[in-house]
Length: 267
Image 1 (tube, rainbow, N blue to C red):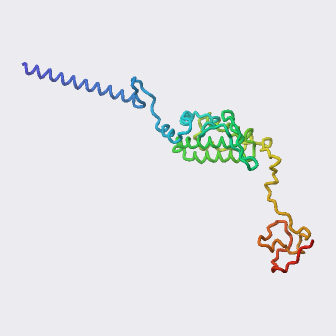
Image 2 (image 1 turned 135 degrees about the vertical axis):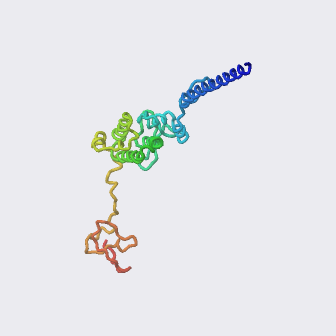
Image 3 (image 1 turned 120 degrees about the horizontal axis):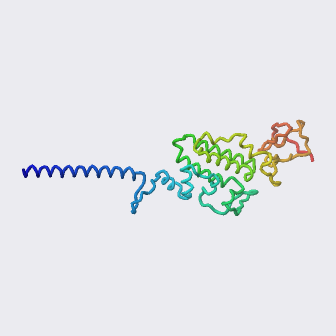
């Protein structure tokens, strides 16, 4: 009788231990489900989950502001902040004026300067980060962004940067950002009608008086022998020199004459 009672008590104790173990296992599984996305600090509070992709981008772009990279990651980047998405931000803009390097003081918090250099640098970094996050999902994204940037640079050669091309670039980018479409390659194509809203004849780039359009036309040297007619009645003396004649307006005969047989030019 004592033996049977002892066996029954041992069985109950074993069952109690099994039940407690099962309860503990259930508690642990629930705790794991809750804490898996994040980490627990010393106070027992659950911290937000770690974004490994974002942490990796911080290491790849150590000189850029982390809050800007984070906004790109979560499609909250404001295009007007491109001027901040640059390395070694300073207060000077380097320009080339009349063949000379000119350093101009500039407040980057208020504008992008007089050329596309600041915008381009920021946009290049923006492209690199955006492609890193969404390039695998949208294979054509890098090409689309690059084409957009080249279109802006080409427009800047013709139209004024501050009043035409820069507003165009920022407005187009902001409209895509407002609808969360920046990662869609098909949305980065500029159509002619949209461009005409900003870039038109009233906003052409100003041509300075010391840089006339005529300077772009090749200048040919003046005739070396002005007393000789420019027609087929005479032989071209320039043609009989080592440099030869490359003047498109020359009408003299291009014939080779042995050295010493060509008459002296009239005075």
